[in-house]
Each structure stands twice: as C-alpha cells, then as structure tokens.
Length: 281
Ligand code: GUN
Image (tube, rainbow, N blue to C red):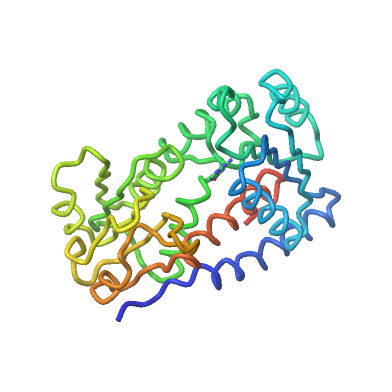
C-alpha cells in the first residue's frame, strides 16, 4: 500500500502561511494584488478563474478580474496588459490560457512584465529557472517539488523520469528536479519504448493528459509516482494519466487525482503573488 500524497491538506497548510505573509505585507502598507485576465467563455477556464479568485480571497490577496469578450482582439488585450504592467496595485498578472482562436498566445505572454509574470512563462523567467536562479517558480512543477519535500522525498542522485515535455509542466519540472540533483530523463510522444524508461524511475512524474497511459507494468516497485494530469472521464469525474488501481499497489508514494497536484498548483500561484509583492516566504 502506497502512501497517498495529500495535496489538498498540504495546500491548506501552505495557504495559512501565505495568508500570514499577506497580512504582514498589508501591515507595511502593501496590499498584494493579482490581476486575472480571461478572454472568452471556455467553461474550464471560467472555472479555473473562479477558483483563483476564491483562493486569493481566502489568503487576503486582492484579485482584479478582467473578463473580456471573445471578440476583444489582440490590440485591446495588449493595451490592458500594458496598463496592468504599470499599475502599482497589481503585483502579479495571469492571462488564462488557452486564448480563443485568432490570438497570438506567445505575444500575449511575452508582453507581461517579467517582474509580474507569476506563471513564470516569460522567456526571461524561463531562462532564470534554467540557469538555477529563478525569480518565480512555475506553479505546477513548484507544487510537485513542495509535495516531494513535504513527504521527505529527496530527488538527489535518484532516477527521475518526467513524461511530457510541455513548456508549462514537463520542461520546467525537469529543470527543478535537475536543480535538486536528480538524474532526469524527459519522455514524450516520440520516445521509443516508454515503459522501459519509466521502469527505471525512482520518481516518476506524469504530465501528458492521456488517461490510462501509465499502467502497473511501467512502474518500478517502490517508486514515487506523481500524476499531474487532469483528464475528464465520460462520467465527468477527473482522472490522471496513471491507472491508479494498478500502480498504487506497487508505488511507495502516489498522488491522487483529484486532491494531489491540483491544489498545490493553485497555492503556488498565491505564493508567487506574495513574492511579486515583496513578501518573504
Ligand atoms: N491554463 C491552464 N493552466 C494554466 C496556468 O497554469 N496558467 C495560465 N495562465 N493558464 C492556464
């Protein structure tokens, strides 16, 4: 039986620390503020934004929502970001992805001031992460690292396999594990014999978005398995990439979906906002 890594409980604990930091900043006259920009009406994005606003309220961080209609256009969106970049009340800016068709996501993300880029998507921040001097940590990979730390799992010298090479998770995750002295392999859709590679992992992080991808035979006995994915099953419930019923009996530690990495990702956004506002965490 594996230890279940309870992201929900850990996130609640970290939230209490963040709220205390927000209070300390307020006492010094700084109200930490996060601007959340959403364009269009994608239901999943609307849900994420609602959660982010609620998280901010729970931690005494001010949130400023900008819900723009789909037909807004690049010019107006870039003008808004420019205003937010110059607004001293706004310490962090998050533009919810994906943007509707016709928007240049890269141009939008690059227009956010690196010092307010709490997603850590700007090339300057990606570069700082890759040379080991991050300004902000990318939310999901940072959430994974915080969870490993909380459960006493040290990547140092261990075989770490990351499945997925996205800019949001896979690539920055590999950087953070490398920084902590893991021996890191990144797998992707073109990897030959995925199972052979994943079976080497002491720490396996799955971030693909493909239900049923990681089966029991792909996991080494005693491995730590972190499932970042959130796939929606036909019944509407969430599931990860890992076949939990097969992998859990073999793993030493495993994250549930939901209740694993998801809550940790959300809390790391709050942490970055506090960092952006000048708080110490
Ligand atoms: N859409 C899905 N995940 C994310 C995220 O972490 N940041 C932003 N900006 N959009 C997202």
